[in-house]
Image (cartoon, rainbow, N blue to C red; front, side, top):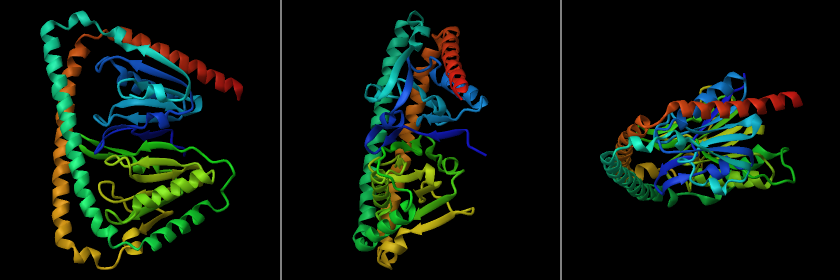
Length: 369
């Protein structure tokens, strides 16, 4: 049975600050509706309602979740219609997205500024300052955690057989792509399968790979070449015309964590903490980078140092998560002021307008079949 929805993140709270992938994720759509307005004006609720309606009609919906509140949606793409809908506050790079048409929907019109009293404005500004500090502290703490992670990686990089790692990448490229190449290079879509959230690491690996025939679980240690392998495979796929979805690490977006080849029915992904999974069905296999590329005994030789680094890293990740939880709580306080000053009958009219246009497009594609 075909999966009717796919779930991703296109923005993340990372060691390099707020990071956005909407330019790639929404590239090439025929039309994008950008919902403009402050938090609390019903944008996420409307996006969720439209997604549910489209799914009920049997269409495939790509759902882009909020890293601050993963149960909320920042945006959707209706795959068959080539139409996207996105919260303008979440998508900071809308001007860079290549699309046939970009339409702003003024959800801010539903907000009655006169209901925000002068003392409310003072409180909101104070909360905004606190929110900025909470995010800044989260990003600084993630950056410290990444530097600690680099210390961790060095033990394995120093003990890696790079010739074996290169050969492994070459062998896997040939095994995956043989017979599927064409002369037209592809442009991959870049996404996150997970994110750092106020509740800790959160991912959609299981749902994204649910209908694939083959899943390769990469095991190993920090610095054992997992991301480098994925980068080589992604580059070779693009050169050889193999469609690939490229998933970046939600902690360090300069690293890759997963590739999905839709037409090959295959995924290969970093299956280590905090997104550690194990084979549980036919077509699952393990690729262990530690045993394939790292000198035997490396773990044992550096066990004490690695244990200390791991403890420092875990403490910093926990601290960063607490800052995100603080940011969510502050954002909720700001949101409450805007909810109280929003006319949701106007929000409902915007929802109906969007639903009407989507229905027209659905009718057009059905007539053309």
